[in-house]
Length: 277
Image (cartoon, rainbow, N blue to C red; front, side, top):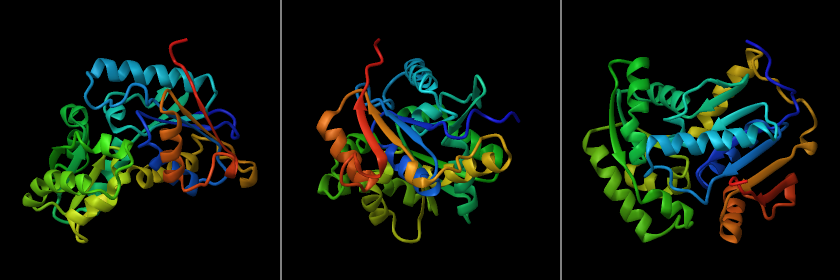
């Protein structure tokens, strides 16, 4: 494989909103020397209710923007976008989606090979997880459950709220009836609601999050020499947060997810961008 770009160039991460910040936080913890650029397309969320053509169009627009930044790799943190953008490279820039590593992690975790999948309608309709898991382990069975209320609940920051608990019960009970022992959180917004989901699922159910699985995949790519690793001091690390809308609400929720007090701490910067130009 050809070595991708300069080691100090940032890794781009994008999602339809704040959900992908759960992935960014995990990547930042695993790779303290790496620079990152996060893009949240908050003006056009949710992606999960849109057509495959629109999802692909939006994703390619963001990928084009990140390429100009420039970045050395792009992480498609959005499960819905990952289901419709399966290219491994864009002009020598590696693309990492959440479907492959999430599927691998679920198969490794499940003892009875009965795997639950929480996702958006678009992700479930794409059959991306089901196809990948079947390819990796034909004996595995996947039981999908669409969760249309989870994204707006997460975007509103309703983490500890009776409405979130009720929605979690409604969506997870059908999976428990199928005797699953592992549940894929098939949207990067869902880890924001992990407490409510785990409460309903119970301690015996393993929840698979995108961030951890992606970190292992990126490590493999770096170990293979296909992605240059930044070895600069972690004190010089820069993280830029971009959004197409959201203002103060987005910023407050982003700070909460990243567990920082303000955007000046730890060299984290925030600004809004306009893709229409």
